[in-house]
Length: 138
Image (tube, rainbow, N blue to C red; front, side, top):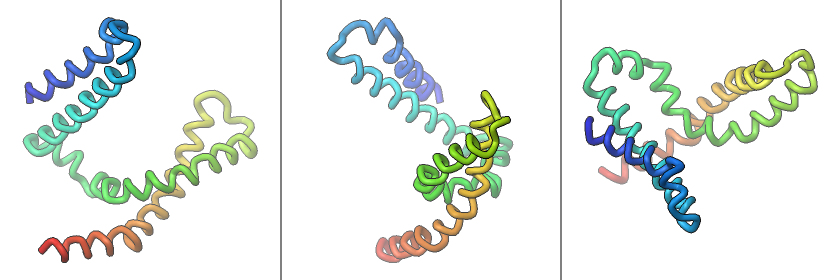
């Protein structure tokens, strides 16, 4: 676990202003490398935490999160279609929603619409192809 924390810190150092000011030619490379380190290492820390701590596994390993993990790809694909429509809907039909309230309303409506669509897409499209892949690897 300490290795993951050290690499995460190294990623944070790479995106610091001091490191980014070293070279204008490699500015984006340092940022890319730093954010990649941070993301990968946080995923590693989360994995170790979930597999080694029972109470955390009970929280993150519940049915809601497992279902969310299964349908996340469909959710990701369809959100680009649904979310802009919900933003326009919120702006047009809910003029009282100002400031931070409008994005929260748009997000909540989008999630309510996207969840059944993503679940249906997972069961109709993804799951059959995943089962075919499992048959060929055996």
